[in-house]
Length: 150
Image (cartoon, rainbow, N blue to C red; front, side, top):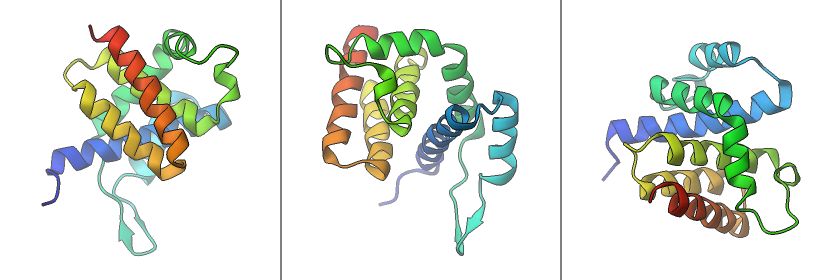
């Protein structure tokens, strides 16, 4: 059975948010321009005869704007949970985008369950990384959840 349309739209929003945050870090694209680009050229686009799932735009916007607005807090929350001697800038940019988006949802979206946040970002991580890195995402987001969702 296929997941409900809203669930697929939120999953697509999360994946797009991670891609947008990665692009923003790579290119320094201002948030309003970044959001416009994704709204106009990414959502529902057809690539190689496959139509991309329409993302829930408001949810996507909230994640991207929220991560941007709370970047110092989010980076501090992540950094505090890294192994001793590790720094956030040592992680791959895609990994940082996944962790930032997941941490933002855990901090700011109590309407989304912890299990949903972690599962969704594990799915995103599977698109970019091997199992070892996916386990890292799971462990870090689980630590964040235990501390911020008491």
